[in-house]
Image 1: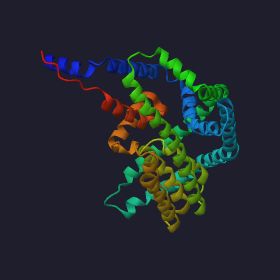
Image 2 (image 1 turned 45 degrees about the vertical axis):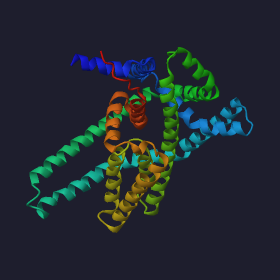
Image 3 (image 1 turned 135 degrees about the vertical axis):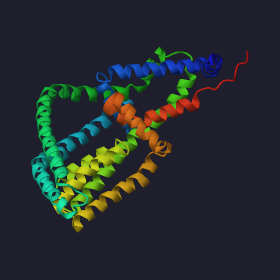
Image 4 (image 1 turned 90 degrees about the vertical axis):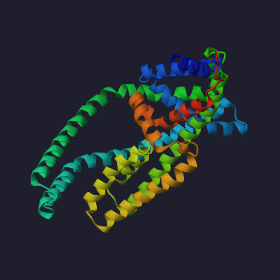
Length: 353
């Protein structure tokens, strides 16, 4: 048994470049695992830098210097964010407040309907079960209200941190985009010398991450706008808030869509009941999700969709548990990284003694 392990070790770790790649991966894992909270602003800046690199390169090709191209792109990007913050977010926020205010009425209507189930289906439902479920839901609603109050108080403490981030992140994005080559050269100087294999994996992953971030942002925008238009056409309440939630749900493959379906169905059911309007809204929602999953995602993520759905779900669970939101956001690129490392890892000849 020991001899088999030694042969496996010689096959897999006889190449110095493989050792260098392993050291780089372990160092990156340790840094992210222990310092992900401190590095959150830097991670946000890196994501935005990847997003803004493409228009910056396009401006450079028409004659702008790197500094001016970065400045123009960043100013336009901040302007778009301010427009969204001043126009879209206040409406979505107000709709969220209205939804929270209407939730007790929605719960009472649901309980009234559930109370009729034992009479309509005596063989399937029991009055005691309905009462227990109703009481459980009421207690959870009270707990949710307390959590909202506590979160609101905690958010007041975090306003100062948020304001600092609003200043630091744009500055970091500017320097990450403007001085990209200088920073990459600085990182290369501290990496191991035998990093040819790591460079091969990095080249592949750099393109994967670039395409993934741009694709995710584009997918979020398209899904949000399409969902909002569909909900508005049928007069669904809280249409903008629900469209924003559906757009953000694409960040979590499979799981996000499953979770966000509950508020969409709940609001539509509360407003329309089991009427033609409800089934029409639900059908439009399913059509948008089908077009997203079967048309938009394969076009935007032609490489990533080669991963098995079970691998994607496990990646979301594992990396989300390790790094929270960023683990969920980068679950597919990280799974693709592992796949690229496994394929690129040298498989040396068996050494016979």
